[in-house]
Image (cartoon, rainbow, N blue to C red; front, side, top):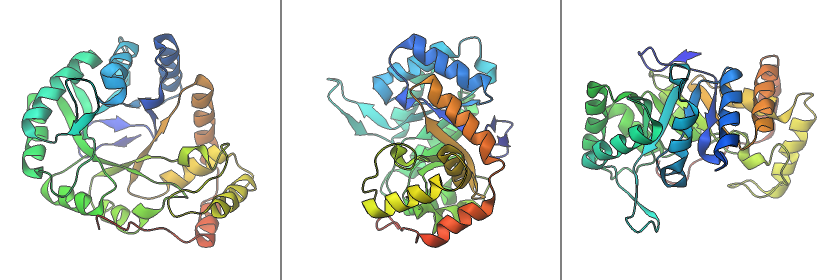
Amino acid sequence: MINLSSSEVQISSIGLGCMSLPEDYGLSQKIIDAAISGGINLLDTADLYQKGFNEEMVGRAIKGKRNQVVLATKVGNQLRPDGNGWDWNPRKSYILEAVEKSLKRLQTDFIDLYQLHGGTIDDPWEETLEAFEILKGQGKIREFGISSIRSNVIRKVLTEGKPATIMMQYSPLDRRPEEAAFPLIATTETKVLVRGSFAKGMLISKPAGEYLDRSVEEVKAMKGIIQESGFSPEAFLIKFGLLPTAVGSLIIGTSAIEQVQKMLKGYEESLTLPESIISDLKEKFSPNYYQQHR
């Protein structure tokens, strides 16, 4: 468990990404229960997922267990009135309006971690960050964060505000945060929430394909090294994701109880995986870099 910022909010090293939860409530309830029973306390959802239904499912599933979980959701993607898509809206007025709907769907009085679901350098950051500070003052949220892979955005937000978390993609196939984001964030109290740890399953069980600037051959070679490590792919990838100092937790999506069990087993196994195995992999493959938003 680590503390978020200087608050008393503590998060587990593994978080449950709720985006992939099945729309069958009974099954989703069992998946969430399995995660909580296994020591996972961080549940990550968003108002955009399933047009709000995901938040409703999560809220219903944690009823009676609210004090056992750290509830994280996101804001910024405003659904159109006709239901045909959404538009980006990081305005203060919208955030203050959207949080009320999320609180109602989640059946809670407060959100532990409220995250901006994206963002560009041209957004009105002053009013966006002001909205989060207002909500903290009102007790409707405990901490705020952003979800972004844009280096220029991360630098700006760290300069103008004090986000508890920044969510970004990171795996052996996507090492872009190593260049600038991780070193910068490591000098602050902010922690990274990693998504995409399993690289769409390509390094576990799904067929290899092109991934960012990685060729199929490169993905296959990396997968082979992971399989020959003597550890499960889940353990290897969890260890890889948690090693950087800046990282606080890995958000891993699941759609079945069996996946939760594999994730929990992989985490336990990762505790005995030598760091040298990760270092060896990194030496054999060059890192990739962001080409935009630098």
